[in-house]
Length: 257
Ligand code: PEP
Image (tube, rainbow, N blue to C red; front, top):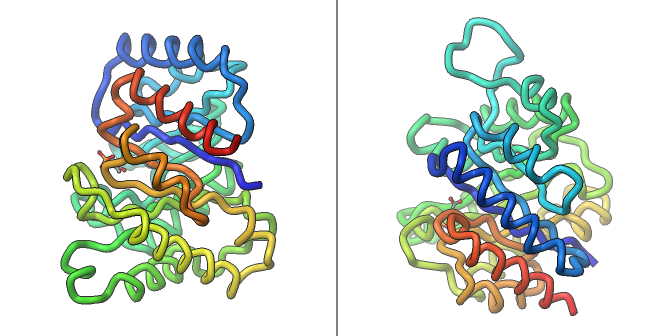
């Protein structure tokens, strides 16, 4: 059985005390749950990673960075390297989020470079891919997804399926309140898993967690998780309220019962 990841991408929200209080409350609440294969994960802003790691230490809650530099070290003002993230004890890093692609012009080859930096530091990349509305309307969804997979994973060796996590996030569903239907999401997740099956040892496709992202909330998570190839969510807006986040962790946990 694959693990289910409920991942909160906080983007540029929450300062020090909000981060501390949220993670504390999350850890307290989930300590009474018997989490089976569900992993709750939070991605706060860089300055608060250490606080989140401290508050979650010893619990099931995992912490991720929202980005990482393409460079190892040196004169790159404002950048944060994978080595720095690893020195905090971080285990996950989001790369290729559509907002990075859109506002910072990140390409698939940048994402691949970042993935290698994370691999070097034994940090698991959460690779985001997804089509724009224009691409979907032009019937280019499958072609876009396959091209992103090929570009972001070019030459990447995988054996177990635990090397990375993939997050399928249709750009038109991010922060818009417009969720892909479970059928639309499942269709793309199945395509991703088939591509993995065609290009990697079978364990990779069978074990890899493929998350759906795009206006996920407590109300729609259950029907998304009921789909065969959806193994969790990458969640923006609805991850900012601890009650909603806990509700989604519970839904995920119950979905495996
Ligand atoms: C995201 O930031 O990755 C995301 C999916 O945001 P939202 O849940 O707000 O659509």
